[in-house]
Length: 116
Image 1 (cartoon, rainbow, N blue to C red):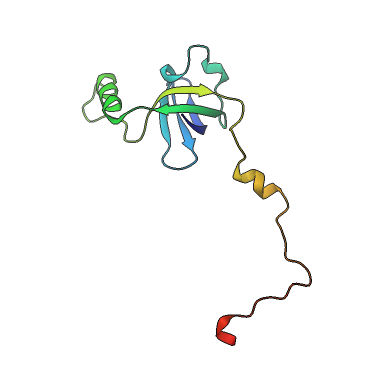
Image 2: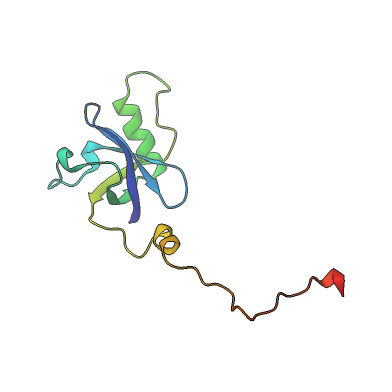
């Protein structure tokens, strides 16, 4: 399972996009949500846990779902999505909010090697 946050969700169209830590945005459909989740609880910046569909399965479902030829999703697609309360571990934003270490006031700067 992978972790990410929802960046966009279109309730009238019943699909949205997940932003993972690294890589391209992931497409998901409302049918990929667990049975106990409802579409009213989905909001932007909601942390999620998701599982990617294999390439062959994504192509097969996209071919069945679209009526126009060549109208397939171009990026990765989630086959299972679960809404969670918080991402595990810390985030980079948490590190920025903490005080950054500074040099000791009596520490000398190292001279460049070309000046010796």
